[in-house]
Length: 436
Length: 170
Image (cartoon, one colour):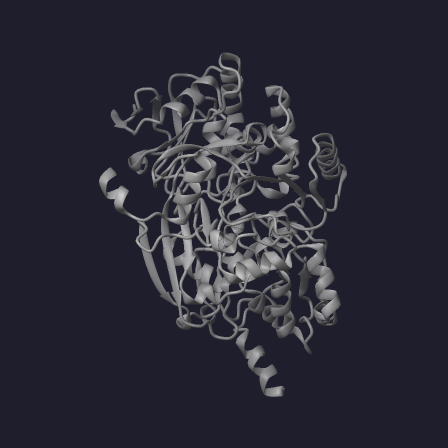
């Protein structure tokens, strides 16, 4: 086995694990102690849980310059308890000298991406299950619970068992109205959600042609596959995004080395054709319950929700606006839009996207995890039905356990808001083209 | 807390997620109040009938979803001795072990019936189902995790390591 490993190429995740653990080589299955490059937490999982543990250890943060904290779960405060959590978070950030503390500026995962805080080759540890989203920059980004994170915050280190990598090779061009979200809902069904202790690498011409915001959807929902991290190798698209974010990669040629070798030892390689893909809808109560939209058509809804790290980027709002332009949300239906960050709201306002959503009758919500995490505004009553751009529809996640949540792309969610029931959103896109 | 030598099995299916274990809209509650709602969406009587030393037994991918540690904290607060499942979601598995709640992967977990009397020998890697009289072996945890659980979880383990050899991490 050692002999076979010595001659086999390495996956991107194995390369990052080797660097982070200071070893010449680290292979799937190896148990290593790794140095973390970036430690991320939010108001729910971070300071309020860390503080007592750090006190017990008698330690502070190992390196405040490597810590990012975002208050995004309980924002804005709706009662004395959430206000206390936010207040504690502010005090902690100030007392521990956390310079990169984002107070109600958006969802942490979005902030890591839009502020250019993630670099290719980084080991990112985040106190949130959607931390893999940062893997779109060629980083090994994994989610951890509060105790693991408190230990990382105190020591800068954690143990990991290097995950084997499943490679998903997409080829072909997505049809108009079909998105990265549809790809991931399809994969949740095909691969299931039990891929724990593995990494998922997204590759192939379809992924290479994708924008960063769409790649972020792929790696974000690697969490739904159960993966430790999702990764996309960095390329010109990655570097251009980081330049625009004001954080250019100095040596792009060197950064391109953060990619799997051609002869890397994958656990599995799945080859899929994007041309075949339809808009996908996940039925209650699992992202793996996904079907082509035709099979879900006609289901009535009460609420349509455009929000979350995965589904409320500027590009997502533009998709919704493309459907909603010239239409109104159906009577009795509420459309809630919670942009992923304040910068997204600002950009959407500046370019007119927000005006289209508002004219259609959308309600603008604060930037934050909101109803997706079951903590913010926009929750559901017993028996209510919601279609959402978010990534999870577990029973009871968005309010009452008797509520039902469907998942879809921003196109599908916007089209359902107009009709009050689930429909194939492509009818709206074609209509617009015919009118133009 | 000292737990009895054996406990009853509370059996659940596949894909038990963190919203079932610790509902998001209740996450502001203190740990004991939150624990009272553990799994209520699929078993309203679980939290009120489970006793210290009892076991949670489940199928595939137990604990999938959020990183919220309260999912494991709730089970621990209720006195659950261990979770025995055919497979675990990664973050939940780490969280449980970090808290000193054994999360034991056992492919034969589906052979255990609700109410069966179980006993666990973590060091030996052995689970005994006293009801039908069957014993199962499971792969032992890596040494550093066994040490961590023996110390009572990650924070206690770090304190102990720091005391014995200055500066050591997990």
